Image 1 (cartoon, rainbow, N blue to C red):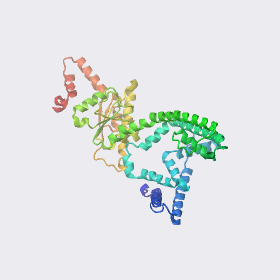
Image 2 (cartoon, rainbow, N blue to C red; image 1 turned 90 degrees about the vertical axis):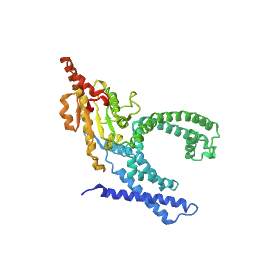
Image 3 (spheres, rainbow, N blue to C red; image 1 turned 45 degrees about the vertical axis):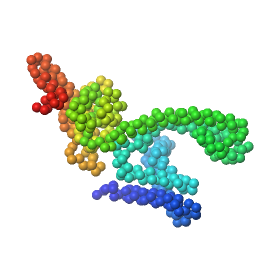
Amino acid sequence: MNDERFGPKRYFDLAINALILVSVALLGLEFLWWTDEVLPPWMIRLDDAILGVFLAEYVVRLWVIEPELPEAIAITGRQRLFYALAARLSWAIRPINLVDLAAILPIFPFFRSLRVLRLLRLAARLRVVRRLFRYFNPFAAAEATLRDNQLLFLFVTGFIGITIAFASATVFIAEHPHNPAFAKPFDAVYWAVVTITTVGYGDKAPITTGGRVIAMALMLTGFFIFALLAGAVSQTFVQTLLHFKKEGIRMTAMVNHIVVCGWDSQTLMLLHELREQGEEVAARVVVFANRERPEALPEWVTFVSGDPTQETELPKVRLEACTSVVVVADERGGMAFSDADARTLLTVFTLRSFEAKLGARGIQRTKPIHVTAELLDPDNFAFLKAAGVDQIIQTARIGAALLARSAANPQGGVPDLLGEMALPKDRSFWET
């Protein structure tokens, strides 16, 4: 039996994790016992060997990346090289891989303390950490924020880099012949970074008129740069943190809840009817829709923003722990009945696919998720039934039938009788 839990990759990962722990332990020993003494030779050799393994692993992982090449057009060797380099660069700048790269830098003595960054990679593999971030992973959200706003951050970081480079070069030219504090180009870079961040240690300062003019211009530019950076962060990462606050925390302990997928003009009425079933039921209602929280949504309703047709989004609402799901028809933008039913069908297929894969994740439900779906076009009844809907409510047909019966039989009482079903539960047809 081919089980990935006991395959070569699993044992390799365990070995790397063990080396991470040994490397961090060596760092701790260095601080505790050998802070004022020469490190033992065995300790230095072991540390260098571990770093060599980390370096080799990083290079191999970078080397084996397969770029995605266009299949519909012929490409030249130069273009193939471009795709290969772009794929490796995209992999290298991912946050977790940047951490791995930083953890290799202790090959240089003054970066030895960066070995502790390997703990982040080790923590990312722990089961308890994966469970903690199952419903909302802030690191993945931060990565997605950077990816979605990469042009904005590229402009900001590029502007900062160009400013530092220009100030470093000009101040070095102005100060180097007259100021021993600017003996090397790196001294000018260090001064520019300290100045633009308004830290101002004072250990290096220009003494020439030209250098002082550059310093004043750099300090004034620093105010603008950090205002620009603060604006970029507030428009991107702050929204991510608010998203985490609203979704990740509130859903971590939710069980036995009712998930309402979608939002339309009738969903608010549905929520009020659910509240009529009792406060205990109302406290377990979660609305899951691909939009921002509607202003008309009552405060007692938990709202999660996400796309119910995307299987990767379903853990946000802890679908594995819910008791039932209600899929409402999406009529946004004057959507036709057939299109609305098609989205309902896709949502149901996604729900059942997610449910079928729970066993592979070690989750065993005692009973299937009960799915109720709203149907607009009666011709689509068979499709929803085949998708696995337990109860199909044909709201449009029921309303049309009641109107027709009332018009054709003015003296009949059927519409009035069925209308009693919509009353509060103490007067409901269901109580008889």
